[in-house]
Amino acid sequence: MNNVRPETMKRITTPELAQAFIDEQIAQVRAQVGDKKVLLALSGGVDSSVVAALLIKAIGRQLYCVHVNHGLMRKGESEQVIDIFGKSLDANLIYVDATDRFLNLLAGVADPESKRKIIGKEFIEVFADEARKLEGVSFLGQGTIYPDILESIKQAEGKKAVKSHHNVGGLPEDLKFELVEPLKLLYKDEVRVVGEALGLPHAMVYRQPFPGPGLGVRCLGAITRDRLHALREADAILRDEFDKNGLAEKVWQYFIIIPDLKSVGVKDDSRYEGWPAIIRAVNTKDAMTAQIEEIPYAVLHKIVARITAEVAGINRVLYDLTPKPTGTIEWE
Ligand code: XMP
Image (cartoon, rainbow, N blue to C red):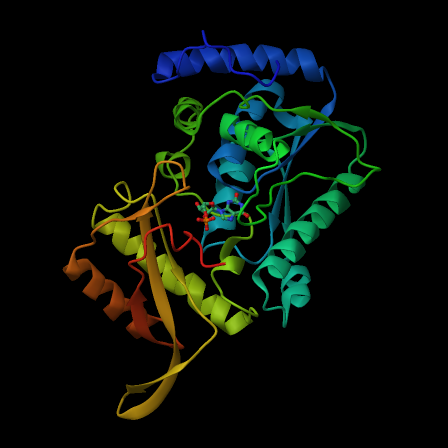
């Protein structure tokens, strides 16, 4: 399969078309891989989850999924990967809790690009450490999708990216694998249809995008464990309220950011210095521009009340109304 989507390729919009695609890819993957082992970095995002489910169907336990918990995941995310892939789908799942490795390296680092680089580099190192422990792996599965291919073409033509995004790439010299990329000609909406046809839960397949560096780019400046914990808890409350109020399907991306600053507040009649939690909720078609979706005031009030009552260390909640441009979607 080359890297150009043929004009004749039908858009996958129905379970039947998805099933035909799955059958075709199962045959292709089996022909490519034979009885060899395939390694896959399984973040739990839509693309890596769908590719994992497809490869499990094609080659079962010849697939080794590595889930690296960098300590910057959202609440419950690694647990969901373990439940779905390790338990329900009976995959060969290698779970690596690398929280301390990442947070120790990030301690005291405030510059956003330095943080991104440290997270990207360490991710590859942790993954490579696991790859070296396995013998006889010849292939690397990847959740590359068509927009990734189009983006690489743009970059090869010299167009500059605003931020350094990270995905698994650039493995060390001693780890040379042939790539298995069954989704590389699909657009995101098609990946979701395929994911549902593979039996993955709707919530996983329609999950909002989450950046590779995770909560690391939302815990602004130098990350501390207490502020990261507050961020994770506040973000879980925001997601819960969006789910309960029917906003999760209407808003493309919504999350909390916590800056490295405190303001004076009051609690139980005493001075209470705390961080502000900032709500970001945007709609976009391609992430190049983004608009602000109106969130009912009643929901906002509920979110403010819950976060300030339930999350230690937060004494204010702010709402970012800035479209992109001028604000990027993430703050770092
Ligand atoms: P910005 O902040 O540039 O984000 O407006 C645009 C979209 O990209 C996501 N994002 C990332 N995705 N790896 C990813 O896979 C990354 O390093 C990364 N950084 C930002 C961001 O969440 C938004 O959806």
